[in-house]
Image 1 (cartoon, rainbow, N blue to C red):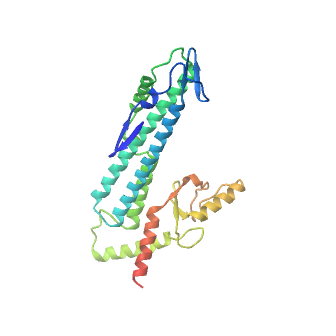
Image 2: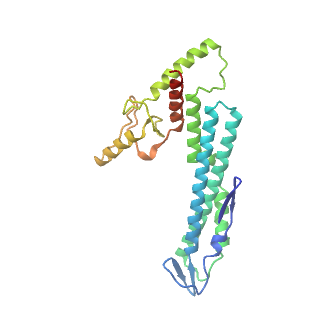
Image 3: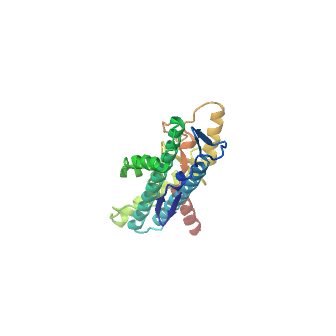
Length: 270
């Protein structure tokens, strides 16, 4: 069983101590050994629960990302934003620990099925040993490779760029105003989908080349080219990326917020 509470991941080995014992009724997911039968149904159920908990971690990371973007958009202190990054790293650590625990259980079960030991092994001990082995290879750099953490950093960078929040913003007012006018013009151009040539409403970002498109437009192209068994070239003029895949697309929340903010400002000046 895995419990997530107050940002802490607690793992127990309860799931592997209920695998069954000699004399149990053999079912579809039971494994026969000489003189004994081990039922893996309880393990499958526990793994399913662990995967559900993983979805809670993902939701927590999504919430933390949105909070960080809210902070940038409302011009909050960098320290507040950095605290959200620490939260993301904690979630990444929990996700890694959870993955290692599930991997330890799955590998232990597969090992038992392959080796077919005569006596029922100490499953709890085997899982603990495997889990400890996996955890011993941990490094802080692993956390920064977490897919949602990478997305968090990317969106934070884009959000700061869109709202022109720079730590070295110490120029005089005149130069700052010129730079701001240029930045606004460039941003407005970036709001236009290279496919539809109109302002994006649901922008998605290509993780490979970094360009953004209207979600429905790019997905339609990908689907059409897939039926033709052809690759999709990035529709952004000048981009050399020639294999756009749906799996490489992520929601561009930072760009959507920038577009919405720009539209609100435009309406307020009317």
